[in-house]
Length: 616
Image (cartoon, rainbow, N blue to C red):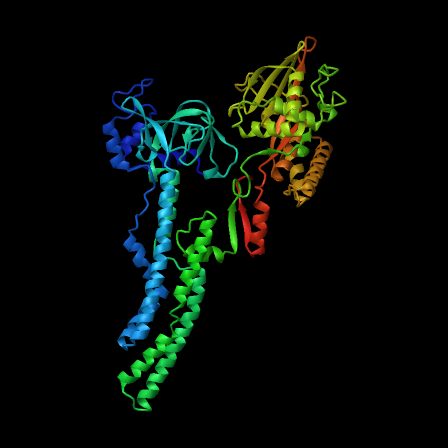
């Protein structure tokens, strides 16, 4: 990950024409006649010039002719071995062997040509099916074009479900959520634009817009995009002679040993026949060439090619395209598999784990000046003691602070799904209706990093918040409509609380090696760590913040993502109530249903799996 300055320099200098890139520094400077607020887009003349300068918006792939595909079947050690044997058979006029070897060469080449040409045709068909069209503003009109025709300076409109067609910046429209898993592996969508850094408006090709609509200004296309540069680097790394598979390499080692031994025997025979028996050189040479031809396993390349062809056909039945039969040898000889986590081993969909909810139910965080409301209208509808919340209360309050109309938000969707499954959808709706009327909802945004809902009932106002732990404990003076400092939190103790939490969490994490397991035993282990962390925080004099931060660290080390929940209740007799931390909701990106079976098969095959993730 590059720092903002360097990243900007790389992106802005990736194109060759500095004057055009300089123009693009101004998001709405798209032509001499263009004025801010009256954007007409590029003219047809500008598009033609930039298309000629930068090329189409696609990573150029070297086209391979069918003749090249055919003739490269005869490039390599094993084809060369058969060609030499064929030539030697012709020299000694052994036309029977010549015909057999030539037929082997032809059949071997035709099978390889058929499989490779079929794979290329499948890839081309797949590429055509995946073509994407976007709405672009040009000559003052909006039209739909193939993304390959985009050029730097174009203004395009994109909406939820579409892939970002090229690198650029957000211009206007909704605050959008962008799935960057293809580039970063992060399952939670990013919010754009952001105001906390210079690159907060950057949209990168290959990412998916999951929520909202916006217009973007294209800054880099094709191989100038970040994903294009990476693809080109991979393509350049693959350039060179036709690869030889690992299995084929092992076979060739044995064949080379046999041929070298045969050559040594041939030279011995040649010398013996000429010097000891007085045979003529031409007669002995024919015998020696016959020995060399006999040492060449002429049927082996054909056997390998046919075997690989059957393998490619079987892979095709599972929906896999084998671009080259050598790849089958490589995957068959694999000993270590480096696997991405998000979306590969996991579902890339966050899920709440209700039993791993951490509750901040210590008595010292109950505000002394808070008028606890008695009866069924209290803030904790599942608790017998209205002062002490339960895990059900924490999940319910989190669901109350979630937007049921915004299911593209992975956090809200996960919380609401868990609440519906836990309480039952009809019962959850009944609880929400009974709790009161939601009069205001401020959704999550990257500035305040929390969502806040206000509920009114019978003169009582309940404010529920969920979000990043730091922002729930102490909002500070940000742009949110509601600011608070949770009960039991003292700003002067922030440094000491953080130090205590860091010390306690590291000690507990190091003491248990099972904290990364999410089965029942793993959850019990994490629960013990949470209890130990809370006890140690109290022993060291840590306050509410220290205990909450330590719990957050323990859960994070176990692979959970956390959402803090807080609530405040006030009525006519209590206008100075404090926000109270309820607890932490634990979420997990669960494994795919087939992950266990897949890992079992890999391990049974002797393949070690390494998981690659950026979650830590």
